[in-house]
Length: 79
Image (cartoon, rainbow, N blue to C red; front, side, top):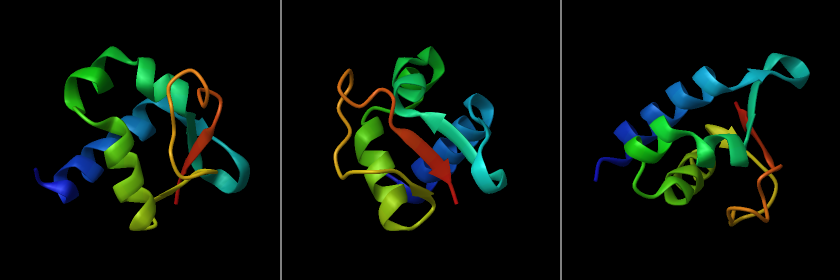
């Protein structure tokens, strides 16, 4: 799996689904990403891709592990 490629696709999807938030950063909720059909087809392991992008400081969100249902309202910001 090419992590850099997956992160690039994630950035595109955040831009597609997100809106301008505080400070002009593009923001999207985890639930929006997780429940989107296109994202479901692209990402086999969305949570893993999010964690990799967070480690590379490309995105930010509160917490370490995001779980569907419990963390649907967590905001993911593109840095």
